[in-house]
Image (cartoon, rainbow, N blue to C red; front, side, top):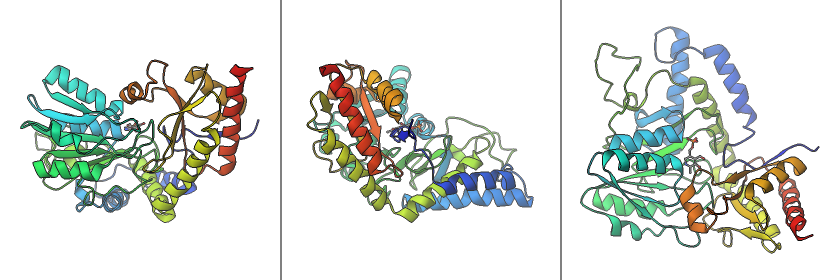
Length: 387
Ligand SMILES: Cc1ncc(COP(=O)(O)O)c(C=O)c1O
């Protein structure tokens, strides 16, 4: 069978740029010691890679202080640090129904066990939230607003700059889940009024799994909800107060940091705009190729302005899971089916009761040929039930 067509870049990007693999191998063989823990040369050199990556990502998100760029394992880890380190009993938070479970579940937990009240802003029929809906929900005790920048289900990009402006006016912390957006569209702390940005390394930043992080604007306080080794000031009995140590616990995934460095470098060399343009060209091809196909339903793809390359559909008469299996087994096309860890948006678009939908996630290494083959495959599957 032909080479696999990978259209599951919403789950994780694959493959990575060659430089990521090469540098991770080089770094781990030559500098794979514990960064920042001792004073011998290798330790210092390994620590420099970590610090350079902090600087690189701080610049990438237009932050001001690399010490406020903290590494974690992934977005889920960062979002738990943010939500659990900001909200306290009696607080109120506002979020949306576009969120991933890495936001929803920590918030449900806070509601259930900590008495935190949460309001959910609903997207419209096209998958966009209206920024003007946010201040209507604000209360005296609203402490945090948290919004998914780009949806991993329908691809819509939310108007975070405007939402952030409302939050800033009221002194409410504004956190952005940039898991799907960073590396595809600009994420700018200053321009978009963001207080905390959360990212994961393995998606559109093109790094490996197991590395992620967050940038915390100056003046924003997140309590540490864990404690442990930091490599410095070991005699102090509490976890260190200063960033980045405040939100970093134990040995860092330094080889992950190294891979992420090269992933971000690749994104910068290619240019975010060019990557996005390429992915949207392919997504538009998918949309145009499938929109009038009998038996194929597309979700939120009529107008692809303010979208990333995430494409959602169903085929009449099939469970999404079965379409995914057919694409895999008969056509060697990798995609993701089901609810995509974001159940509320599936309720909103009417796909929760039919066990979700099929998601194609376009990446920088996909080609027009990949898309043409995929359109033909979906059309053939759609015909199967009609015969
Ligand atoms: C929008 C969004 N937020 C958060 C996450 C969680 O990312 P990770 O699994 O890397 O923690 C994902 C992953 O699919 C996502 O798409």
